Image 1 (cartoon, rainbow, N blue to C red):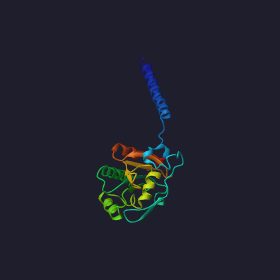
Image 2 (cartoon, rainbow, N blue to C red):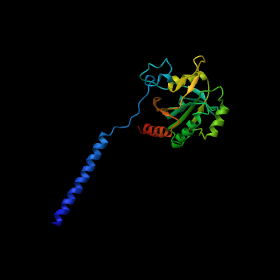
Image 3 (cartoon, one colour):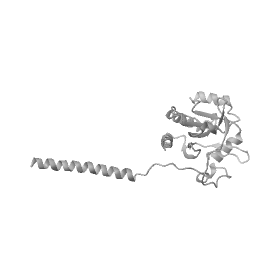
Length: 221
């Protein structure tokens, strides 16, 4: 009788192990695989996109650019070639959302500090105020690592064009003031092929965690 129960218990154990394996296989087979969209101008809030490109529904890429960073160095698309990077728009005297956005971008910098495939790029929307020396002071104050993160200034028209035609992330300011910009809380994720892959609220910690996870996904895929 005892041997019968032992054999019975052994059968139950094997059946439970088999069931767990089968259920696990079904779970992983049916679980949706993570993907990231590729954003084009027609996918984004029209307020953030220049009217000349709002109709574009495919093959949108970040245009070439040339600006000056906090060290007086010229930064171009080549500095971000084959990199995954986060872009944002700010100005150093902003007292509303910018401090929180900068603090959160520092967290992103820390997360990928030792990964040369990930970089950061912050454009000043007030380049007439944010000179190289002003950006340098701001960078030092906030712990910006020069090899990882560029704060750039330059021609306002060129920055405006990048913001609204490439990164799809900045609102138009006063209509009567040409190239006036109202920056948003958006962090823009760009992949190694110069495509926009995500937008994140730079003021929220949970969005920063999502951004970090998405960067890791891009690095692995």
